[in-house]
Length: 525
Ligand SMILES: [Zn+2]
Image 1 (tube, helix red, strand yellow):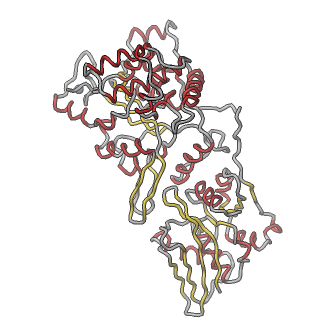
Image 2 (cartoon, protein in one colour):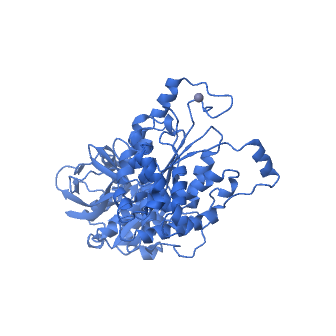
Image 3 (cartoon, protein in one colour):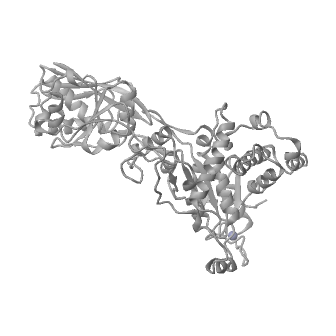
């Protein structure tokens, strides 16, 4: 007897349809799994056999061969258990094989026959739909996540017995049928988002820093902050995601797919609809390469740069990160994705993040302080060199964050200084500026000013000489590099967008020069 079921394999976010074939032959009893299964998949033979028997079905007293094809596609993990068990049960005549023809089966089995959730439900269900399946069967725990994908029927079951019952159409009698027509829940244009994110209004007496953050959000510019410990760098960085607009459904699904593979929640603050807020990832400087860029021996897992996809990646104490980790950021900054090469194949994860770096001015952190720094020239130089030119080249905004003085703190307490901006105000300014930029860039591959190429800046977006006069002089006198020049132009466009101007004026360019800061932000010669 030969029977088939369908499953989906994921490598990175690349999905492949897997056909699970079970054959029962007249040879001596045995259970063989073929088709490049890795070690974790081989363990599923034991789980599947126990689950079938403990669910009250007979295990064939003959040779059972299960083939997963195409064999060339790497297959990992426990998500194939349900499909393997159902193929065997179909070959055995316990379940109607024809009924399973258009249904992808995803789930791990426990020894007692329960169907368990697996990581990566969201991208697997999406893949099942894109591959043309009409239905997908998942565990009860995975129902809500699977239902976020529109255009495919989701059937959820608690155990193997219910799965068999559903295909044999006996499940209705037991009253446990649960079909959900997938849809994106809770996505309405005028929904009022509730944020538990920290507010910009908490930042007082840091007007330059707040303004820089606003510009970074409006133009999606990468940013670096240098300042003594306690100057408020982390406080500022944490507030950047709140200034960013909601993600489009498409972008939110990409980010959620990465979260799903990592075993994280894909739901927003209401715990029911797709999370459309940009993520904030802040890995510690001692984090491993795998934790930051992704990796793992068998199944490549996404790292912080992919979990931050369409959001903010914050590296506090950036010079303390391992040099290879910092160097590895260059590829994703260039191509918005990370390719992880493993023996099993190459996993590709998306990684389009807004980078925020923070650094102390020197290893002891006191270079700006009155009592002075005790670091040696060599240790300061080594510290500064950790942030290499190619990485800094991508950072449009370099900001020096000064601690708020005692006098200013006193004025704040006495109500003489009020916050410059609230997060809500800033977010609406950012939304308007982004709309202006995306309208201007409509016929280009870009949406935000930070993405615009140098050729386009100096071609179709060329500014009149009177606007760029200060920049031109600096360039001609060798006080500014061509790259620095282009970064100033990108910032000037964002400043004009925030001010509601059609095109930057000399004032915007002058402010851009200030925001761009020093080519050598740690100040070591
Ligand atoms: Zn120092």
